[in-house]
Image (cartoon, rainbow, N blue to C red; front, side, top):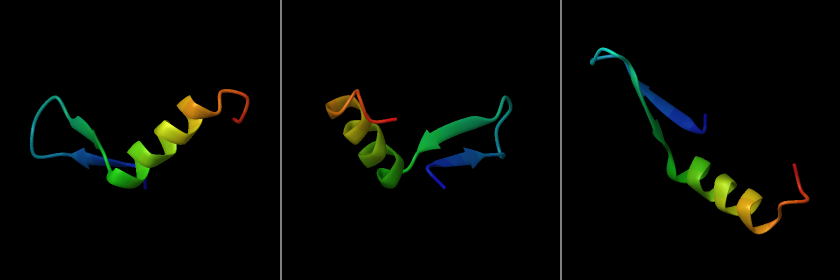
Length: 34
């Protein structure tokens, strides 16, 4: 997935994986692409 869920802490925390960050950067660089 694009995010990792840390279920060891409460509340749960989500961390973006490198793949997710790459996808986000692509979306930011191409706002017309959804």
